[in-house]
Length: 130
Figure 1: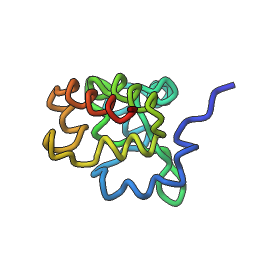
Figure 2: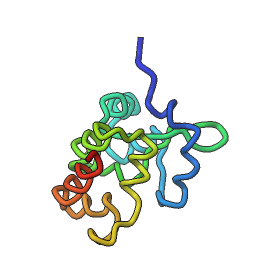
Figure 3: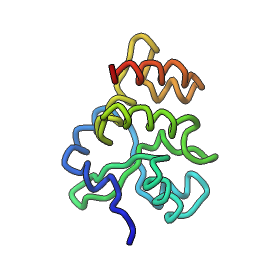
């Protein structure tokens, strides 16, 4: 039996992320962007390499587009997700934190990770658990 996607748990709060997350991809589109198949994306979601929430009236599993690159999941995303989830954040709170502007970075944590500044992002994420 396959474990339920975390997206099922987060469906009630997904719409509040629309103001923060500029673009979303459904599972087949995320797979196409990363050069893989939908089954591999579902495994990435189950293994916490990616996060998703259920969005739209049809409650479709959607991944923030910034998490997906032609090489696969955004570099350093998995470790950063681990830090945030270990700090007690749920999926929606994690996505919200990654896409909320932080003047000290500057920009958002996900933008900092795209610029290969994972250490700064993880330092801030670790501080949240104290």
